Length: 407
Image: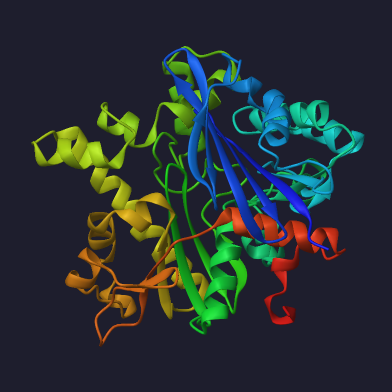
């Protein structure tokens, strides 16, 4: 019998939900502000799109009205009962490297994690509290965004300080975007294009690069939190700890939480350009002669190139490159600039294919005939969450860690 599963993906400017019957998408629900009101756009796979105006004015209340919408629209009624609600969790700590049923112990641990990462975890915690209140008795499955990376060797897991302290206080390089990388690895295997040594660039508002060996994680540019690594839309990426501490003093910020918010929300493309966190607007400003926008663009590209080189070194070479994420999938310019220095690894971009990629399924090949393959792959984290949730309900947690044993 198929299972009705609700996926939740809370963001800062919207709330997104997707309802599945087994692994088949039924409908999507997108809550956002229109002026001072909250509207919900429903995309039904059979009946198309419609917009409703629920009686709420705060986006945080979207979860409170969702049970009524599911009932009124006849998605969950009678024999079609909700099996589980599934949410992605990106939180530091060994405990959060596994998929788990949310219970009192999980909530206790999540509250502790809020103190360690007050930027990303609170939104997730608040959403889970709302789910527990509004979907009483329904199983909540927390899907780990770090699980894919947790199988990597210790060499890429620890920072360079006392490992006893790292274990005791759980301060390690957990890595994130694991759902995206797991999906891409699984998709490439299914398509018969998964190489031995793969470097994947997930480029979006949050960005990272991963080294993947035979479908298994080796390294990821993100670390203890999603702050480490690349220059991102508003995140600073990797920064010298001493530089960070002196920046905190210069800004006269006393609160650690406030400073973390600054590093996560006021830096990256936004901080460098002084204009925007949107790469399209940064490129436009650069083309109009804005020097700070030009610098933001070049630093963004340089960081990606640098981490691609690091991941290739980790793997002892690279057999294929993949661009994924909103920017990786949509920006032919970023793909062109990033690959300009990849000839030393054996990669050459085909300019025409890059401008007008031809897709087979969810992937397109954009390299020249003489090059190692360069792909664009439309990643699907929601599909991976469903895959993992089904495996969890069938008593096979973290199924994407073992690609060799897939049915």
